[in-house]
Amino acid sequence: MKKLLLAFLVIVVNNVVAIEPKPGANFKNTNEIIATESGNKIEVVELFWYGCIHCHNLDPYLDKWSDKLAKDVVFKRIPAIPRKNWAPAAKAYYALETLDLDHKLHEKLFEAIHNEKTLNPADPEALVRWIALNGKLDMAEVDSAFNSFSMNTKLSRSFKMFKAAGATGVPSIIIDGRYLTSSTMAGGEQNTIDLMNYIIDNVRKDKKKQ
Image 1 (cartoon, one colour):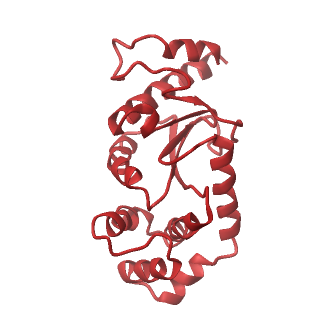
Image 2 (cartoon, rainbow, N blue to C red):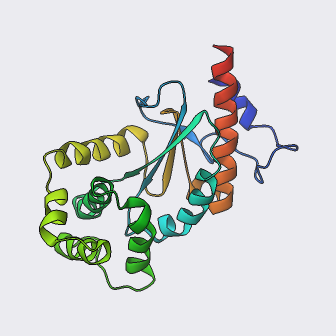
C-alpha cells in the first residue's frame, strides 16, 4: 500500500494522467476493505444516483471507457443510498437489471430527469410508470421487479457499500475494494477516467508481485 501511495506522489510523464494525484486529495483508502465478487480480476464500482447531474455528466465517459475494458478488469454500477429519498432511484436501476433493460434505458432515465425534466427520481410510482412506458412492459411486471423478494437485500448492500467506502457524495469510484476516488476528487470527468486507469495499473502491478 505504501508503495502505491508513494507512486501517486510522482508526476506522471509517460502516462495518460493529466494531474498529479495526491493521496487524500485525489484518492483515498476506503473506510473498510470491501469484498469483491470478481475473483482475481480488478473490480471497479461506480456509486451513483439518477438525480445527480454529475453522475449524468460522467456516464458517457464511463460508457466509452468500459467498452474497452482490459480482460483483468470488471466494471459494475451500484446505486448509492446515503439517504431514504435516494432509494426509489436505486430500486429503478435494480428493476432495470432484473428486466434486462439496464443497457437500453439507463442513459434514457438520466435524460428524462436532467434533460427533459419530466421525472422525479424520488417518486417510485412515476419511475414504475416511466419504465413500463419506455420498456413497453405491463405496469404489473415493472411493479413486481420494483418489489421483488431480493430488492431489500440489494438496497441494503447499496447502503452498506456507500458507508464502507467512506464516500461523501456521487459519483464515487471504488477500485479493487480498497481505493476511492470521485469526479470531484479527480477534478473532472476525464481526469476521473485517467485516475482510474492509473490506480488500476498500480493494483495490477501489485497483484503480479503477490
